[in-house]
Structures are given as structure tokens and as C-alpha cells.
Length: 430
Image (cartoon, rainbow, N blue to C red; front, side, top):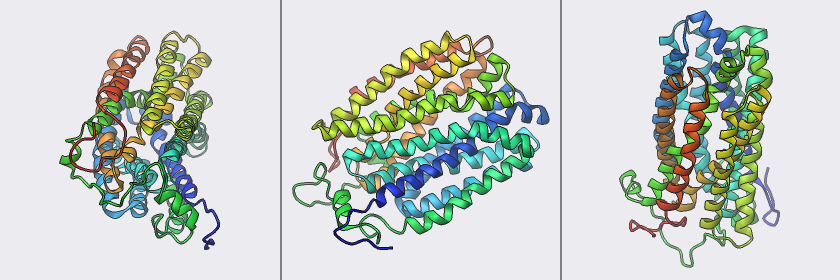
């Protein structure tokens, strides 16, 4: 397949669509344990504290995977980086089928965590390589929508598969899905945008010569080491904003099925009916937040102004929605308020995740995204450890705690990050 040099191709959107599908698979795999935990815990004799331990192990290795795969993607490229990540995580989730104890679950959750982490720095890197600034947040929104769709379909899908195959058979089947994705990925992602045979001259010019980013005169890219990256306030602003904000998402990803079981006495079938609803809000927020910042940039706003104000809008939605979740007394009201929380979260996080590509050049983006992911996991681990102690009577205390994290994230964005613009040397730009 080749396109004429005069035709406008859309390979960049095909690439991000494939990454979004990988993210759907990613979330089906990671959410399976939470959805089936009521039965698994009975079969292996586990407690809520054991579940918190497994979440902690997953997140620790997920943090390591963010950094490791951030560097791997910068070294071997997006095509092979994604292939490696999804092969290892598909094998890892399938191995859940042979576990018999918390120790064996801990081993496979560690494998899953380190390999699934690759999707995030990989997506940010692909976004920076394939999209100009005005499209970047929307592309990130498409990717993040994949996470939301995965969360939407995982609860009912896993519940149906569980009723059909049991939890061991379910783990085997979902482990096979990643290998189905791999072949079309290797066919479609043949090269980067500068050499891909399907990319037209018009699309290549859009990607590589975006007027908003093109320098007046050609100059070498600034490619800092990890130590040099940590010398920039922009890096620390990204890390701090994710440290405070990401625990909100992970609270619901890891604990929503358990929350529904503890608070409303739900069984696995009822969890499957209700647990997908909040992620519809997340999907809409992913696409809407990306569209909005792109629209503002197209209307003449600077990248700096558009990103920061859209992120702030997301924060302004999250706080009252979390307070609404605190006072929720029935499951319908609870899942609807949580949907609003995740709507605001995805508006904000999609734009935060574009910042590495907005500020740094291509061969550094994966590393910055990986560092940001590590910071996100560090914040998430703290809330994970607090959940069992803070939810003995109700989940209100943990909801209030994460609501307080939102303004902290916004302060980090506005006060630490500085101006969002490309860095072209070791001396900070503002």
C-alpha cells in the first residue's frame, strides 16, 4: 500500500488507534483480578490486606517498568518497544491461571506490572513523534480513551467469562488477546513518520514541519541524559503534578469493584453491571480534554496557556464530584458521581501527559514520560497503603483525601513547571 505524494494520508491516526486498542487490552488484563477477587479470595483464603499487598507489588514493579520502558522505547523505538511490552504482559496475565497462593499471585502481578507500564511512555513517545502540538492532546485523548474503554468493557466482559470459564480459564483467554494484536501492529507500524511508506508528503509535512514548532533555522536537538533531565524545573513540574493527581485514577481502577462489594454488598454479577459506568465519563473526558486544548491552540492560544487552563478545568470538575461521592448513599448515585470524577481526571491527565512531548525532543520524551509514571506510582502507593485503614467504616475518608490532592497537583503545574515550550539547551527556558 502506497499513497501518492499529493494525497493526504492519515497514518498517524491509524497508529494511535492501534495503541488505543493495546490500551483496551492492557486494562482488561489488569482489571481482571479486581473484578474476580471476591471468588479468588475465597479460593486462596485471602483478605483485603492481601489484595492491598498485591496492588502494592503491581504498582512497585509498574513504577520500575515506567522508567525501564521509557529508556527502552528511546533506545529501540516505538515499534519494537510496544511489541516487547505486550508480549510479556500477555504471558504474565495468562500465568495468573496457575496461581494457588498470595506468593504466586505476587510473582505474576510483578511481571504484569513491569510489562504493562511500557504502554504509557510508549504512547507519549509515539504521540510526540507522530503529531504536531495542536493535535497532540487529542491524540493523547484517543490513547487515554482506550484505557477508559478497557475499563468499561472489562467488568462486564470478565464477569461473563468468569461465569462461563471460571477465573482460571478467564485469565488464559484474555492472555491470548495480546498476541492477536501483535501481527497487525508489526504490519502497520513499519517505520517512523519520516520513512513510513504509507505516509504522504502532505502528512509528513504536517507532522515534521508543524509551523507552531518548527525553528526559524535548523539546529541540533537537545538530548539530555537522565541527570540533565532532572536538572530542569519543567521535569519536576511534570513529576509533581502526576505524583498528586494519578492516585485518583488508580484509587478507582484498583478499588472500585471492592468498594461496590463492601459498600453495597455486590457480588461479581452486580459488579459487572455497575463498575463500567464511571469509565464512560473517563472516555468522554479523554476525548473532550484533548479536543478542547487543540481547539484553543487552533484559535491562537499558546500551547502553554491552552494546556494549563484545560488541566485546571479538569481539576475544577474533580473536587466537587469527589465530595458528591462522599455523600452517595445508593449505587446509582455513587457510580454517576465517580463518572464525573473520572471525566474531570481525564480532561486534566491527557494534557499533563502531553507535556513531555511539548517540552522535550523526541529521543528524550520516553524517558521523561517514564519518570512521570514513576512519580505517579509513588503517589499511588501511598493511597494504596492507606485504603485498608481508612475504609474500615466507609470510603468517605479516602475520597476526601484524594480530593485534597487536586489543588496540590494544580499548584505544581502552575508554580513549578514554568512555561510550556521546547527546551533547546541545558539552560532552563524560564
